[in-house]
Amino acid sequence: MLCEYIGYLYDSLVKRGYIKGNGLKGHQLTSKGMETLVEFLHGNKTRVKGTLNMLQQLGIEISQGIDKLEKEVIKVA
Image (tube, rainbow, N blue to C red; front, side):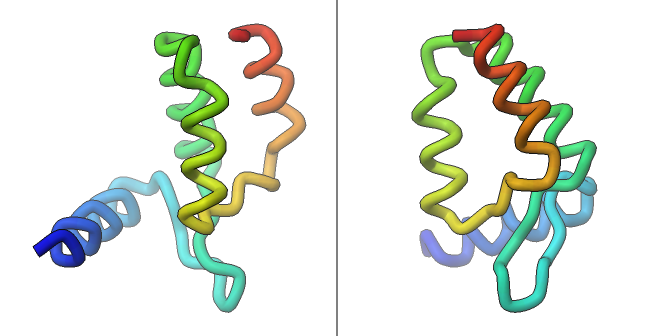
């Protein structure tokens, strides 16, 4: 049941343009996903490090635009 829900969430994020498949590397946040993540982090300052760690553990690549994200996180933290 959990796997089905995760699949549903994944499909939803892809359809909405937040993540995309990146071949053998796994998944990658799109520019829309990066913008949304930065907005979320600004509103949830206490969850910044945990959220970024969780994305990395899930294999979601955030290196595209990571400089911008790191600068935004520094502003938030």
